[in-house]
Length: 116
Image (tube, rainbow, N blue to C red):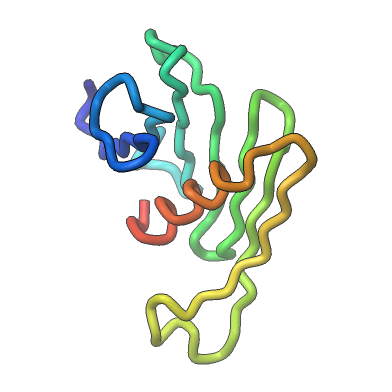
């Protein structure tokens, strides 16, 4: 385990290890762009992430990658005053066919609520 912040996402309300859906951790704290590494439970050694989320809080845009494939993109629909009220943000989310929408939205929630 590294000293980097890590999220572990479980299915339902169970916190049992057998119900882990995936884990997320920041790749490096010294980068200009945010990069999160996403690991599925089948990836026990965690040498290479199953997915990567790369983006910028400055532009409020993020892309989710699975290897070289781009399964989803997220862009902030900025509205004047939305920066004053947390929870009033609006996002445009593009999820490509064959991708689990709930998975992508859960990554967005982790990014938005934790200011990685």
